[in-house]
Amino acid sequence: MSEETTKPIRLLIADDEEDLVTFLAHRLRKRGVDVTMALSGAEAVSAATQLTFDVAVVDLKMPDMDGIQVIEQLKAMQPHIEVLMLTGHGGHRHGVMHVA
Image 1 (cartoon, rainbow, N blue to C red):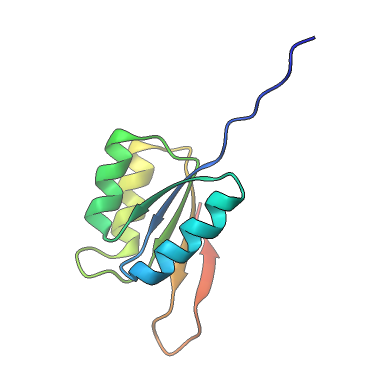
Image 2 (image 1 turned 30 degrees about the vertical axis):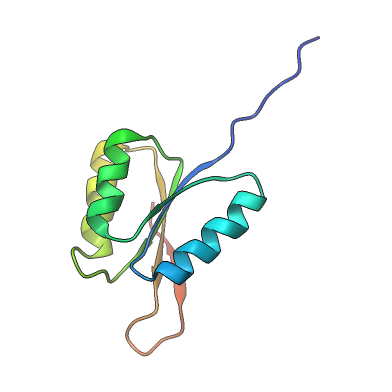
């Protein structure tokens, strides 16, 4: 009987708040998630040209490109990717929205 092995979830976190990205990555790695950090939209898109991800957590507002642009590019390259969008803008507390 062979043991079934499960691959860790491959997660991309894209947010320009380095402390938040580092915190999330640290916590998720402790749970066995394979995390790639990106501190800009361009870094996230670049990472997706080199690696395949199961899930992406993307900030809505980043200086170089907004989260919608990042998600559009990620989905064009990796249509299967699930996306969660974060936002702390607009006077609201940080929120999360499942995009696709």
